[in-house]
Length: 300
Length: 180
Image (cartoon, rainbow over all chains, first blue to last red):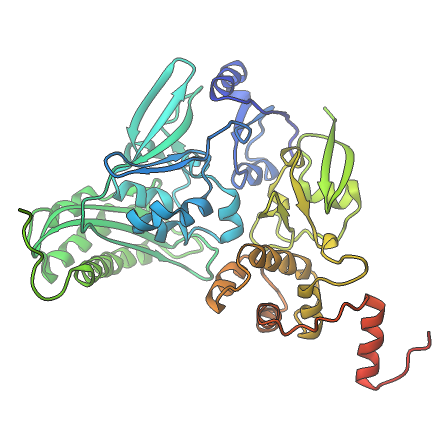
């Protein structure tokens, strides 16, 4: 493996200062599941590795009904999967995180590390986009907050600037009755990356789709939101024709490549199928959650 | 630059001198001499190098030894106590939970981590958890049965030493008498 010096700052301020001091020679490490593989394969050759694991309270998971969910960037996939507020208020996130790799890797990898790697094959980004999440990026001088959908720039490239550290993920409160679906279509066994990943949320009003967010992983250089496809359904009555049209548009909006999980054409076809399947799952779930029989009395 | 590193493995303190890029896997095997932990895929997929660090099951091939300062590390060598096998080890013996054996330390450590946090997992929970440990002999049914045997308390509870167990097993097979 490549050789490097290992630094363990005890605060975010100290970590930012070290990042500025070492510049391009430095890489941050948290869970290590991505960085260590890349260093072992000599894709990365940092002279300094700065660990974020000794920074106190960097892995918090907090929920507030008004503010939503806040995840410290050091929160591990497994802890997010098992966190009660995630399970209760963000079933889409619970479902997504329990599908990431397998439990041992979820025990190690952090959500911040996952996002900054910018790997389009990984799962969490699409569901965070579907839930309109944002990330906080901090440097020595201050911080900025941007939506997750703007964070992914290109293949393994994010909007993270030199000297910046991703510190927090914020997921706003979900409107009551938000319909959702997550599909991870796997080429082989459980621990592989998705051939196609779909995350969908819909705000329903009767048989109409008031609002929709549709995101994909594994079908473009970035984890992407399919805005043109969303437009087909937003504000419209949901029927087979329209959903079929949305699936069609989505299949042209994605930009997959051939790899050992399938050809680009196969993945486009899968998108066409999985979008319809995701809408059906979301609608089924929403109608199962509704109280049967008479409607709840209107608030006084 | 080499540095002194204290590692707490199976309750023992080891003081080793390593580069910061030393992986926990290689520190365990080559610096400390605990070769029960195996290297398989080297990219965190196969589970052969599974160890427990600070209560969490991890891949030691993706863990820097310098990041384990002050944490309790459990390897396969830490399971048997006073010459007596851990129930999981006993179960893998009795239920044929291994074939070639190279994935076995990882399988047993992974199962231990599961039972430590969830002593009565469902069949589904066992299968999901163990999905991260590959067996190229494909002996998955027997591995699953071995773990289920512990969950269902089917493993013999006698506190025999390894030697006594071997004697008892040989006698029960009725093949031949042990000469010692």
